[in-house]
Image 1 (cartoon, helix red, strand yellow):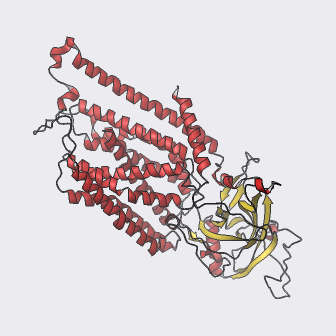
Image 2 (cartoon, rainbow, N blue to C red):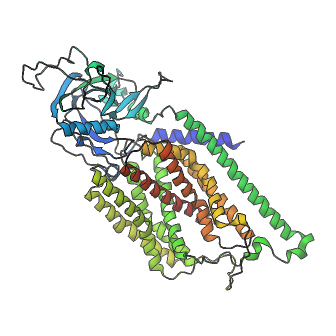
Amino acid sequence: MAPAPMMSVAATVLMAASADALFYLPGVAPHSYARKDKVKLFVNKLTSTHTQIPYDYYSLPYCHPHIHEESENLGERLSGDRIENSLYKLEMKIPQACEIVCKKSYNKAQTAQFVEAIDQEYRAHWIVDNLPVSTVVVNELTPDEPYYTRGFPVGFKARAFETGKEMHFLYNHLRIIISYNEDHNPDPAKRKFEGTRIVGFRVEPFSITHSWDEALPFDKDETTLGTCNEMAQAVNDPANYMSIDQPTDVVHTFDIAWEEVGTEWSHRWDVYLRGNPDDKIHWFSITNSTMIVVFLTVMVAMILVRTLNSDIAQYNDAATAEEAKEESGWKLVHTDVFRPPSDSPMLYSVMVGTGVQLAMMAVAALGFALLGFLSPANRGSLLTALLLLYVFMGAFAGFFSSRIFKLFRGEDWMRNTILTAFLFPSLVATIFFILDMCLLFEGSSGAVPFSTFFTLIVLWFGVSTPLVFVGSYFGYKKEAYKPPVRVNLIPRPIPAQPWYMHPALTVLFGGILPFGAVSVELFFIMSALWLHQVYYIFGFLFLVMAILVATCAETTILMCYFQLCNEDYRWWWRSLLSSGSCAGYIFLYSIWYFMTELDINGLVPAMLYFGYMLIISISFFLLTARYVYVTL
């Protein structure tokens, strides 16, 4: 039981390291404001967990200025972010009460847009000083521990106060609350910073049917509303909700409140990263899962070592020297162990090379995340990093693919290199293109613009492919690996195998332990992906990845040993598929997650979900193939 406290300490250290590093990033520096400085409020996108299809904020008929889109990185584009200017004017530390944004007359088609968005529970996302807007959610079980969710709802459904009929109501009044921090040290020389820093941004939405003196012409700068003004704050009155079921006039308004808090700028993201009420369950589950998988891995290693020691002792025992002259078990096939696979040796080498590329990408990305360079404060950084790292790791794919193919005495090196450069990216690009056409048909902001498509093509053909060829050149140029034993020219006949050594059974069993290593963390990763939460526990992810590597290695060695003991030397493909079958369990798990945890409606959202989960499962399969190669 000694490893338990060590693992706990390791997890704590990794968590602390990643949490402390999250915010001190190059290019993400704090901005100090003076009183009355302009504070820009940007609108971003509309998202829903029921459709998984993001839309531009102004795809709904909100009040808007002459729209100007902010520059975005590759990751933001691919995730559907569309950051644009707004009509909301803020000045540092200047409160405002019931300011009118605009008055709009909505026709039947426009109100239908809002009704559909409310039915699908779309949330609007804003940004102030690089902070996403949030709303406070109070759990009935722990009312003293509120937590924050990103975005605010477009509206809500409720029964009308008078008729009792279910209706749709629009949030047309928004109370913007901005928290700030100042250093009040009386000695200016000891102040850490001058001015005011924004450390919080949340919204309280209201639905109000505004009233005013209709005898006078409406002017957003001159009209005084009767439902809220400088003397009377806005309130949610069920008898006065703003219904959007029929064509109507809607006045959009907002308040601005400023509150000073003690939160430091470096910890302003804590409220977004703080777990939901399941956070304690996360800690408990991942700790238990880690211990169980470590225990199983040690048991597998002990069984393997004891079995090998027994075999070696039998061969070295002087009392059984005569019996040892006749080899048995795995020693009988030692001259066939390194025989190249008879089925698709080129495909095998391509898959291993691609797996190495993905593994190098994952390790590098996880390293950057642990150092804090992929903080959620830097929007799109994780997706951008994954893409760029994959592209620049192309040389490793070419090198290891060529080394394996040369070991198999392959001669068509050009075809092997081309397959390494294009097979996996072509498969992903095909799935991605189909999904992107679906998003384009839906008018989603998640549809990739032509400029982004062009960037991806340039990265693929202009960077990744040449690097694969460079790596392949050095791999073929290097002398081929020489096995420790010679390979017979004539293959040894393989005896009939027992039923429990059937390839299907061994492959299915081989993926159970690796899946167990990632199953708990997989739940939280999928929740972050599909429920729009923030995943940041990279310390835990590092531990899970280390356990996954050990589990894949131990399981594959064990399966391979039992196979050789039965005089079956066709281990190349079976070893790859054994640990790789974990990807099949992940895809099956995604089906279960879709049916039990998600409430996704519509064909296109379902296609998006299963399309991206298929890409993830294929990538995971190739990733485990790399671990098998390194192990064996």
